[in-house]
Image (cartoon, rainbow, N blue to C red; front, top):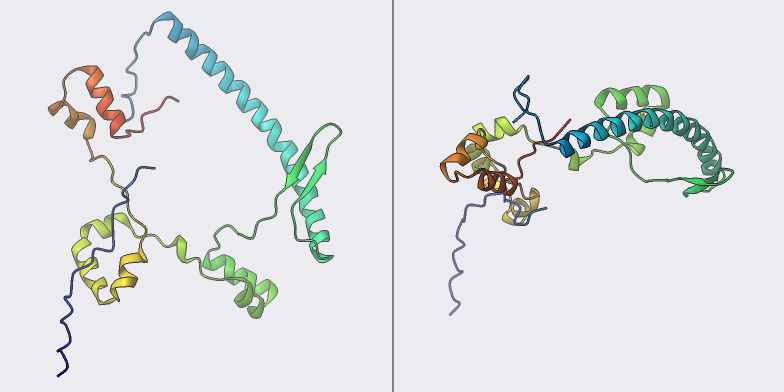
Length: 203
């Protein structure tokens, strides 16, 4: 006599798994006077920053000139069957024009304009959906989390279990004030803020 089929339990799957491994602006006008070595570092930092901006602007001008030439050469090479990266020689150094099988994101307007200029057939063959670019609106998801999870339960479990990349966690709003409930010493506060990966920075 055949054994009755085992009942399958409809275990609820949370598709929004948390990633398991790791991979507040200052008040305007609030100033402090640091030790002299820090003050010197600030002046040196600003000076280096100004120089970097100057050289970055100059580099951009030269880069654009090289890029325009390289793009024209790439088009010629592609027509003749060479779809590979190539080096462009300077008098003493060189640059590499890197060929990639990837594009920047295209909007619906971009696609329509492409179809208008090159034909619908070309658009349908050369442009595809970028599924990896799909993002939830975080606020809408937060407000309707349980409803969204419940609605997704109709998908097969193996699909649902692998559909979304694991999400990260983050520090709660107002965390800088909240840490003071758990630690009191400035060194401990700093350590806790670093552990929470608070993104304070200088500018």
